[in-house]
Length: 215
Image (cartoon, rainbow, N blue to C red; front, side, top):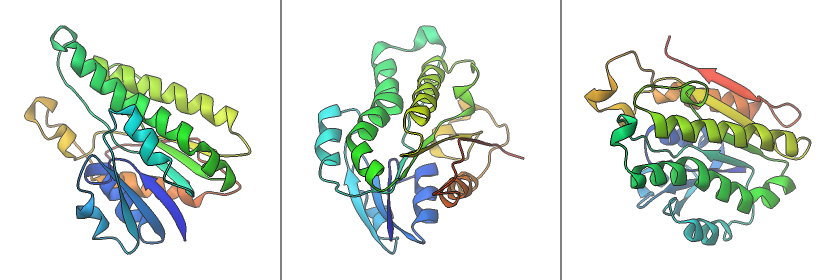
């Protein structure tokens, strides 16, 4: 059975991915705290509880993992407000969680992923391609994540497959606040199925980019 580490696995898109891949993978379920809510519901799973804003904690936790086949960066934060109302702490948290945590975790697990000729998937956003009003920090982080993913794909070609998935508006608690509007949203299971497509494409092919949006 292959092993998949999924950050943000306790809720939203990350949880949907864990439930989908948990059908035939051992899941290392990433959560800031108390991953038991998802771990207890999967056939084969273990917790990966770490504060993704703490680089040292990520490194320490990752170095306990010996083998992994799939790494999925699904954790993320969104502070919606006009640029002038976002403070330094909100910018720092956005970059720490959305960019630096994936970079750190990837760096630590890359040797294991190379050994398994594995797969890295980043859950990005449409905001990784175009600006969104009152989402300056989020857009900046997703543009950065896309740049990292695209460059890493080129560097690791032939060793580790790298996929960037860009969901449209998804019905998660991230967009639950009325200030995010009432435009159509899709269920997180749709994103999980897109991840499944990327996972099942290997090992001799890679889904480099996939955009999934509400119909």
